[in-house]
Length: 381
Image 1: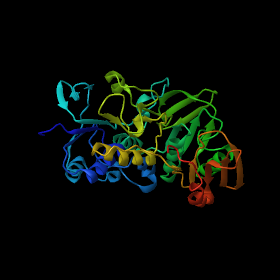
Image 2: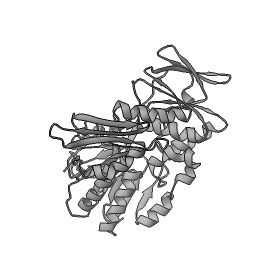
Image 3: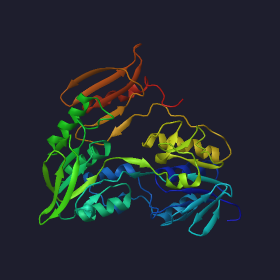
Image 4: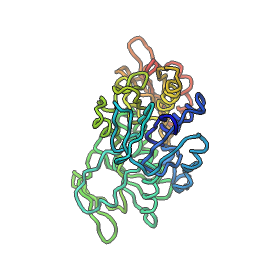
């Protein structure tokens, strides 16, 4: 490369979508993508639909790194880790190898919160955060029937539904009083739980998993309330957190995520962040719609048209097809008005003046989302 390229660290949804948008603006500027994995292009949300669709990891992948490099007119270095960044010198280091950049984009995502569990079953506990994790999990699950899911948030509930559809016996353990505790009001959560229980999912809400040990017939999992659950494999879905280590090492400002303003530039000149690793104006949004909006805005900025990102109403679809769910959590407290009939719940949150702040819809009520979206306030104007 005769001129310093734009370097993008990460080839997930954030990295690839940014470069796709950038190529719409600029077809020629050199771009180097660096990824710690094999660079296959896939949609991370589809990882929790693989058993329902009967898809292997390879079948979930849409293209390999070679095809993506050709399609986007970029260079992609796979199975490669950036070990340090010299922001003043506009250089990243791969071990001892320096690589200069004109602009640098951090799109390396979030990592699973580590499960702290006693016992000798650690090799049978899986956090499924990328395509290789999914492949490893499917290989381990081959010939087994029982799965314990730790966590009853979005990912935990999606995997409970997906694995049940795949014919597995699923039990969910989570230290909360209801499923989807940070997303749904209680009545909506109960509707989704009833739907999952109808598939055979068993819930243990309240206790934590404290110990997991191997036995002749699988795993014995001990809960903090004294219960024991027998299973074959464990999925850890207890949360994600933005990857921060290299940003901290570089001296870039971080909080919950890598701090960026509306331009998505970090505290270091010419270094940007987007996707699950970024905290935009104090907001960490681990969802696809904010990521796509960020990619479109940052692509224009990188192409010489400074563009601030804005987030309109961005409801979240939860992939529990047994009881469809769409939710737009309110940013501030309001008054909930809830109508329910079986698994069909329409929960609306309004302020004192009657303005819609957020909603939660389940079952047939998800059909109301388009009309309600028009009333929702923007997340970031």
